[in-house]
Image (cartoon, rainbow, N blue to C red):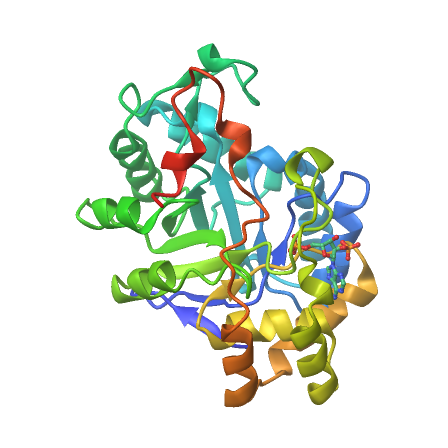
Length: 316
Ligand code: A2P
């Protein structure tokens, strides 16, 4: 397993388990099975609505000696309704309590979008707070305070553009991780290399194309990443599966990667991708697949008259 080493010496396994879309009723067994298989990095978020069940699975794994807290990397994310400086601590403490851990290893600002305190998913434009009302710098001050309180050992951002990340690089305790959608159809080389140049680790979400996301988030005629012909051909050459090729590609780029599964066989398959080494020719072939295709467009933030048009979200 490859690790990313932070400046304080902490080491994060590059391959982790994603838990977005892992339903309550399934997620606990999946997390426990993953830990028993050897996963040591869990990617969670308050908005996934499953942190309590993950917490119960963690408790079981700790009690049974499957893994210790110190051996495990736990990430969670601040939801958009806790962006005010004084509310960030509430968000962090709620995830810590649900997960039943004393601290997080990494806490991320989930989206560069703010909504009102009592809103989870916005209905209309009145549910949002603009970035003039709650600037991301204010949210970052709250994140820095959470770090200083010891609620988390590292802080970072998610779904930020490189430009936004750069603006944060000047602030006290700059982000150490940026989590964004990354896979061969959305390679984002400028973002990945620009982040790495700042000393910020990119983490790849939706590495397998997230085909289990809600129908409302899908478009017609989406490309099927796991069925891509080039990926399949490389998988055949490697004696590996397409998912393993996609995961190995992310690790060989030096990014962290968090494939989601609730299926024991696929959990094992995905973890074994850490043993796959792609050749230079295979990497070149995968580099040629880029088509700037987003599976997670962020269109769900856009409302007529609202402050978050998609065109401005990604800075593209
Ligand atoms: P499941 O949870 O039933 O295994 P992403 O990580 O990009 O969000 O993708 C998650 C989706 O990919 C889920 O539908 C998950 O289903 C599926 N998946 C996870 N691992 C594999 C695999 N090794 N092969 C095929 N599909 C997979």
